[in-house]
Length: 47
Image 1 (cartoon, helix red, strand yellow):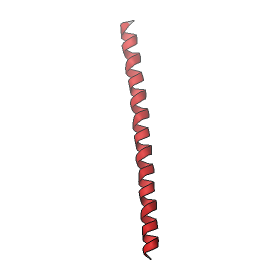
Image 2 (cartoon, one colour):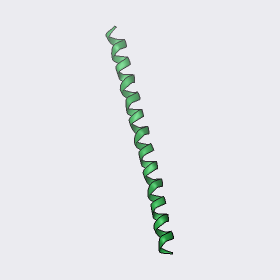
Image 3 (cartoon, helix red, strand yellow):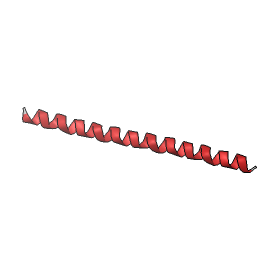
Image 4 (tube, one colour):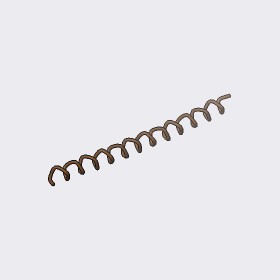
C-alpha cells in the first residue's frame, strides 16, 4: 500500500511541475510579444 501512495505522490508532483513550467513559458512568450510590439511602435514613431 505504501508503495502505491508514494507513486501517486510522484505522479502528482510531475503533473504540477509540467503545469507550472508551461505557465512560465506562456508568460514569457506574452512578455516577449509585448516587448516586440512596443519596439515596433517606437520604430514606427521614429520614422
